[in-house]
Length: 114
Image 1 (tube, rainbow, N blue to C red):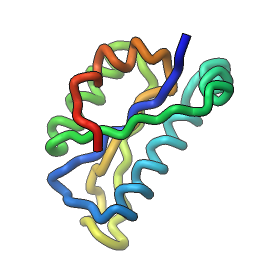
Image 2: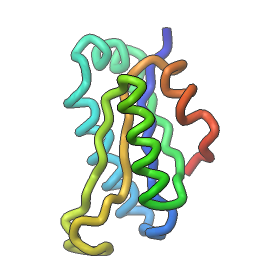
Image 3: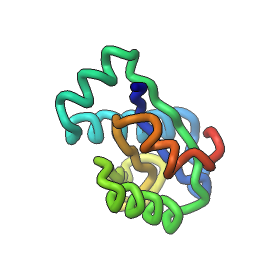
Image 4: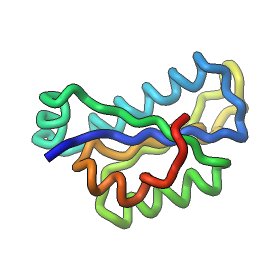
């Protein structure tokens, strides 16, 4: 069984690379901290695979978050504090997992890589 984590980043915000990386890191860590310890252990033992993909906007981000939650996946949506690039309260990205690769691919497999 293979494990991974998927991170979705909004494209409409046109985040600078460093900001996008920081937001993705926030999402990855927060989702991992919320996840089942045994799943995290298996994922870590495999090298902690992460796939970063793009969504068009906040509406699509939240729709994917809800689909993932409905499928029983652990998710997190990152809301920015607004100190640098975006307004306070802007939802920038989300993460799902770590979980079984097949479960994540069923929901996010059609999204383009970031």
